[in-house]
Amino acid sequence: MKLASRDCRCGTGRQGRTTGFVMEFDSSFLPVLIITLAAFFSSMVTAIVGAGGGTALLLLMLYMVPAGNVVAVHGCIQLVSNFARVAMFWRHMHWPVIVRFVIPMPAGVYLGLQIYEMMDHDGLQLVIASFVLLSLVIRPPSSPEARGLPKGIYYVTGFFIGAANIIVGVLSPILGAILRLERLPKEQLVGTLGFFGFAGNVFKIAGFAFVGFAFAPYAVMVACASLATIAGTYAGKRLLAGISSQTFTIAFQIMLGAMATRLIWTALS
Image (tube, rainbow, N blue to C red; front, side, top):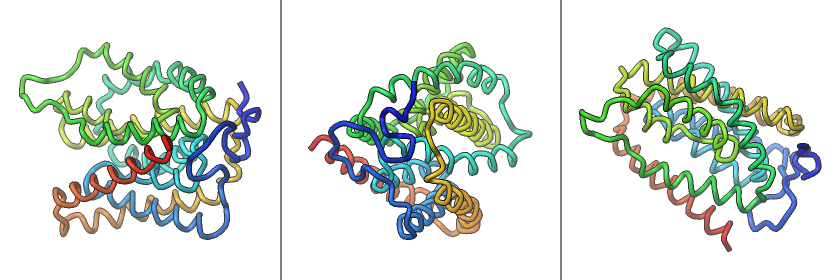
């Protein structure tokens, strides 16, 4: 399986009918600046409300990066943010769940790459945007009796998340809803979710590299945006105390819903 045969190696997008926003990435100053600023603000959002920033960044990148390439490039940017969280919360990891989750992920990534190869721009854009809308309404059960899942379920979850991560790119809302069933302390929840994201992006990047995806055309943008995620996380933590998290979250979810709806409309029109 070689992505070069489908015009993905040089960031020129996929073949086939497209009604999406872009078929080619413009690596000039302005697009790089916009994505860098978006990475800063998305990381700040995550630091303030706990999640959602990576989703917003992915949606915005769909306006400037071909849909066939956006998941791989987005994974590179998010890897830095995930690594920082893993380093910070290393002592709080919930390893029994992590080990079961990570072991089957490579097999899932392989399956995801097979599916990814068969999808065109519109299909990928539609799936990503639809998933974002779905993630906005997913909530963990509030019943105190709803505690944990059979540990073996995480093997299955890791496999399917590995596959879906190649196609969708952002799965933290789903993972968060599942992991909250464990009723973990906040530090363990944040750290374990961070490790899920870190492992998912490592396997995702390795999978795309293995099948021939060329990251070089995006190197400058990835470097700038990665540094911006660090600065955004720091800024978000500084602002956290003075912002109403509930109000901010509602406004942010409305914005995500509007962006995702427009992408779906564009893919279907």
